[in-house]
Amino acid sequence: MPAAGALVVYRAVFAALGCLMVGTLVYTCITDGSPFRAELLTPWMMTTLVDFYVNIAAISTWVVYKEGNWISSIFWVVLLVCFGSATTCAYIVSKLFEITSSGLSQNPLDLLLLRQDNLPERKCSFVVIGRTIFSILGILMAALVTYTVITDGLPFRKDLLTPWMAATLIDFYINVFAISVWVVHRESTWISAVIWICLLICFGSITTCGYIVVQLLQVSYQDPVYHLLLNSHSKYGAAPSQSENSLKGDMFLVHNNVPSVHKGATIKGIPE
Image (cartoon, rainbow, N blue to C red):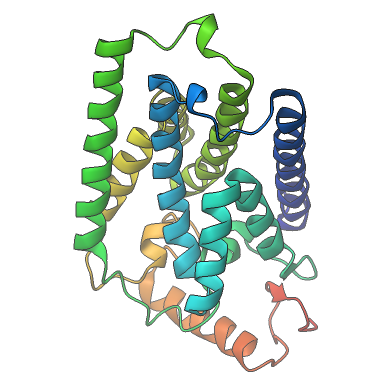
């Protein structure tokens, strides 16, 4: 699919998912009341919420990296904690609309995932911390799921599917979809991408943490961040020296509001 067409599709899909989640929340509030009730906190609901917020932690990590200052980072993270995937979709759509389709020659996900300033100099200095944190979160989530299965039985029971559990699952899987988009973009083959997506659907944030740790084990603290976020076939993933020089030029033009002189992606407000 051409990059311009892909950009339109991504905008439409995430906008639709965001509207779906908002509609689900409003409908569930009207028909089933407030979610802040003690009787809703069954063992599997609590496990699902922990699973949900571990994924939120992963998405929030990217948001903090993506944002240019702590004020906007905190603002978006608070919204993520409060409104979940509705915020995820709103954030992604807002960033996609900062990318114009005029002259777009590379995958828009490259521009979506990366921060738009000083990219080549930004290193993976958090590698060891990231490995440790997400390893712990993955292990804790696996232990919690095991404990809940032992003490409360399997989750595949009709009595567990309350209106708010259904809304939580929709919220959860919209975030899983967002993470899956990155996984598909990150993986070099469809087979590995499908395997990881199946694991995400079945095991949720356990797989999210496992995948992040696997990717962090493949980079060092001296590697640019885009080695973690993008695959080796992207404009910035292959041939490090050339891609860094190209990326420096692109981001210099964006940062200094200078029109691009080559046929490449443009950011809103900068003519081709």
